[in-house]
Length: 64
Image (cartoon, rainbow, N blue to C red; front, top):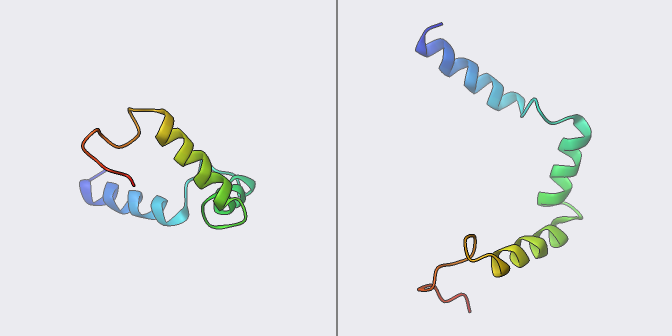
């Protein structure tokens, strides 16, 4: 398989969506990121960022 073929194959897969997600998984992911679970998901992310210094902002960054 040539480099061009691999690039086209990756592009095709990306456009088709992640094959590891089922239809139900895609539905839940859409609800988490843009739907009715968005606020809860954002709160959980904010909590993780605040409690984990590895994920949160560095000491030089003011988040207020």
